[in-house]
Length: 274
Image (tube, rainbow, N blue to C red):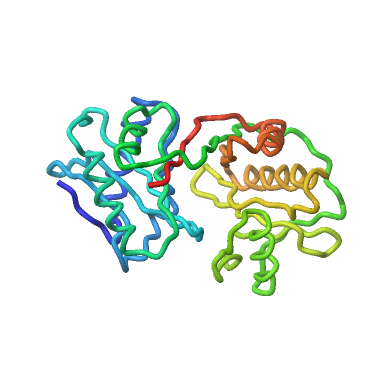
């Protein structure tokens, strides 16, 4: 049966992890479950949908905001329980949760190999909005000489206006007022002037690079390559064995940058607007 959760208990988190393991073992690739968000739900409003059969979790769907104007939905169904309408029930409940929140659109994340996921999106009127490659680096990054004019440091309170403006220019949407306050946010400077930003998140032996952007006027000069090399080296020095990030499939320049440093594709994910 479907249950809504305003905060996930340790037992629920473990059940989600166990379900993820079963799904990835059967399907390969990875699932975009955003574990940092799941472990830090506010508890103020329902953000997750779970399907339980007794004490065994057979389905899960999470709602994610990421500070962007659209909401994302991502989930999974136990391989042994597919074809029972669980995915439809999860998505129906998830869309109802989205209606209770301010947003401009809802995107359902579907691993490209999942024909069932694509069919589910299309049954709900979904249209393909965009696609992203999920990439991972398992070894040391390819060496890149450091430009002495470039520095990468943690963001401070005074950096917020610059961070928000760089995000706006780079991604084409107005970031929330809270952008730049995350302790994991980094600022890229050239000769002391902010020219880029990123967030480097560590979780166990994995590290993720998010919101990475260099000012559009300075792209194509090797700055992004230098900065990403530094972030990967920092993550590995701190104990990460895997560094991951995502890139739009039509961003050939960024994809070339990432693969030239040692990232390799894991799976392609399609984002359906519902």
